Image (cartoon, rainbow, N blue to C red):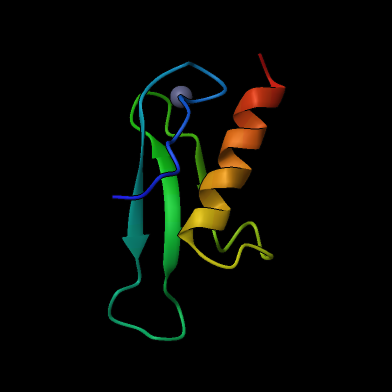
Length: 68
Ligand SMILES: [Zn+2]
């Protein structure tokens, strides 16, 4: 996939996955990371200044590293 590895969920330590949403609309597409255990999510939409999925992943990883 890519060289950015997703860290586990900062809240529950569960496994997270990244998925693309809004595939039908060009105005509203983006990526989101969601925890399959507790439904914590982070999307490009909520993090307005993320440029792409790699940016989102690195933001997620930073958040994950902060809460330990
Ligand atoms: Zn979680």
